[in-house]
Image: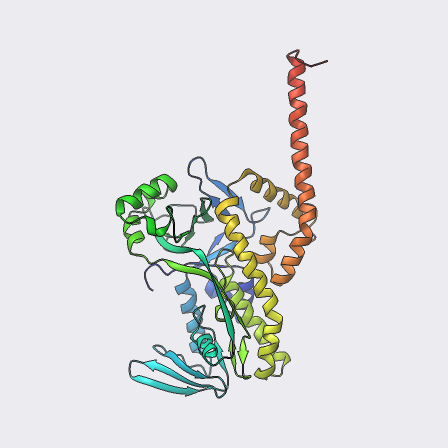
Length: 407
């Protein structure tokens, strides 16, 4: 794998549902590490563990991208009628005929298919060919933040941090996260601005890197012996949202997953959303009698609202993770949410739980959460009022004891 490009995946219920349908859940989960909450690392002071669910029984699962890819490739190669080819770079596609040109080490190779599915990621070559033929339009919205990876190795063969949590270092306009790996290391990902005084570009020497981390991430420095080397040599990746329309052309070419609707990674839903795409496309094919010219438009019709919704929620979660999770008010709101979930089982479910631990369509999640906000706001206001009233009462009692009550 290319150095510094191994962002771990957080597989949750939507991805597991898809894997379950084809009998791969157990194989994939064999290498997964459950994370039952967020561990917040302040600049100073104690760590703060925030459970994803009231009882701490629900978890998202850290898994390496490479391990998941290998499991899926092994399953694909063992399926009848499947041939896997490597070292083929798509350089030409005629959407009207399904004729493709691939660049290989041995020269150009031509191929023709009745159906072409572009599942080739946010930088999709298939989408690029559809653009070149005027079949789709796209918009690319990049953040003014990028990402870079570091590694926290195992210490004496054991995890250096709690492996049951997703670790977050929230720092206002930037943050770092860390996810556990089966070899007991952690993959850390910094999400920093791409410009300015606290950006990737502003740290140019090993000494500057170490000074910055000692000031802003002091607990990381003793755990990352290759900190300066990783920082200087690992690349900075781009972060953005890809939108295009339509997702299909000529009844035979379709886009799926990130190729159609890439999102930023802050809800851990990129892979989960892609797997859910496959479930929906399979459903559309069944309903269309296997006719791709009907299934592809139906797929887009059903999924677009949902993929737009998770793209919006992923951007909102970036602000929450880098800025809000460390605040006392955020912790209060989360505690009230857990109380509401217990008091109103099934009726009140937090946005995070609906996104990560259910298969409720993303657009429905967004609508439901908007409806729940008034209830949550009322409950939080009641708690705050109760706390204030108790404080005032305590002050009055203290004043009476001291003979300071005003008449």
